[in-house]
Amino acid sequence: MKLGYFLSAPKNEQSPLCSLKTTNYLENLLGRDEAKRAGFFEGLWCNTRGLLAEGTMSNLFFVRAGELYTPSLTCGCMPGTRRALILDSAVSMGIKTHEGEFERTDLQHAEEVFLTNALMGVMPVARIDNACFSVAPDGSSSLTRRLEQALNITLRESTRA
Image (tube, rainbow, N blue to C red; front, side):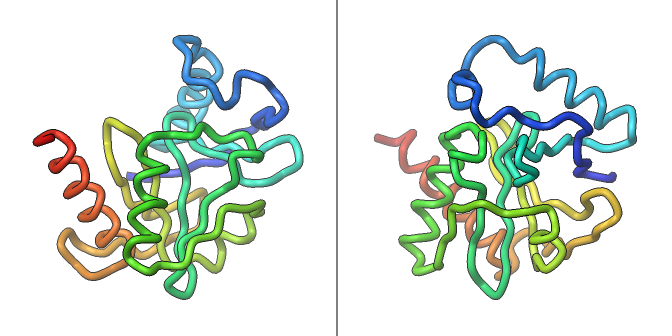
């Protein structure tokens, strides 16, 4: 399955709604429909400045040289709960993290790419448009899989409390 597709319309990072979780998902649903019509599972947004933002239903992460990268909240992405847990886990594991302003071309040098949300947890990305990325099997020692395991442990422990 082709996973990621860059959407034609930008995400408005200046909108007061971009960082709020509301019941108004129309923009997200329209973006997801666009991606599905193109044969992709998820649509990815760049913001009005051309910087990476997020997926229609997910936060975006990528790995380069053993370090974790994700768009800054100022780029218009949702401050998702799983996003925060992944960043906290990475710091706890001694993984250097970068929240910043990244362009689509920054993904060209990524070793791994993954998406997160509360329903799917961590979803490795094999392809965005024509760019392909390595997806390690479950249980491997890739950074994505290690963070996925850490997230799952954190979620199990929080349900016991």
